Length: 127
Length: 136
Image (tube, rainbow over all chains, first blue to last red; front, side):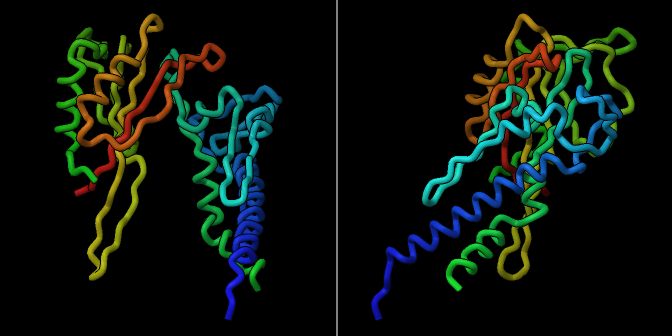
């Protein structure tokens, strides 16, 4: 029996590409989920009164700064809004108020395990 | 994975940064070095009235993970996050970070990016170092 390595490589790459696109959507969905803790209620720039459990969408600049570079076997996700790192790591204001970290990547992975998601795409391609 | 305990870690940080650590100023006027261990689990009832200079916060329970071995033995790993914040807007955390990278090189496992002071967010400059360890 001959093994067609090129076909396997193409199939894995196709599954990975589909998976990576799915993750792109999953990270955006996590950012828009009302799951992130905040110490108090605040009025956002967009006029919305945000509660102590909220999403990370205010002006939309951060959410819309997400991009992904997908190659044959790698995907790099980038959030290049100026304040993205402050959202991810949290920070303290000059008056001592703490802004908690909001890790949307971990939140997304809790919602849907990426290893399982990749497995689903592999089965879809090779079945 | 390191097995360093939090009090040893705190001592090593205080020794390494002896000349650079800022102060907590308390209600009764007493000042103490601005170093604390904060679990995030128990809310501190007393807070300093003011913080000056470089503040160091050791967060012991940041990223827990469980390892299960054959025979059902388990190990609970976690991460110390050593967060440096600079309350003095004329100074930076960078020299303290350099000092700690050298002083903790035997157990250091990661570093977060420097977050500069942002006037838009009214945020302090900060950077954190990470040490993986086994919880006991």
